[in-house]
Length: 172
Image (tube, rainbow, N blue to C red):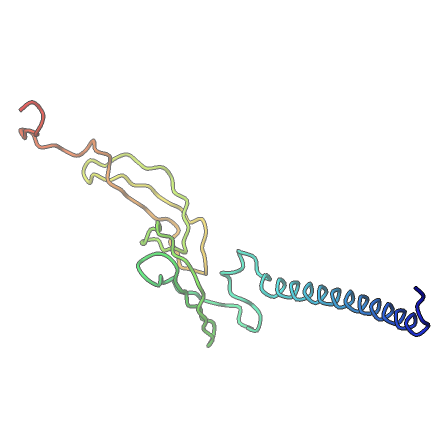
């Protein structure tokens, strides 16, 4: 079957049109992928600009003040866990997120880190063992003591049992 000149011309035009549409679709896909890539890089740069250690430190951008003073971390509820710390410099104030460890010694403060020696011998008069700690690290310009002392009850050897009491279940 032979095609007429008019039909053949129309088929050639449709082929060219289809080829042009494929080229346009490929360019659009490439442009969308490029836009997606630029968006992801921008988000990563803006949101991921601080590493883990820098998250709790105050940002230096926009403030001329260099002598920030920070208060203690105040837990939101209870006496440990997540909370807020207030910082002030000249007439500027800002609040920062912070965390108070649940095993901290309240006497020393959560912002003062100490290196402790081993526990001493048991004092028979007080029934306590003590050890000393020297200041290792200060966080947020906190006021810390250079040395601290911690104490705990001695092991069961100093506790006295009352004599003459009979225990249940022991051959009575």
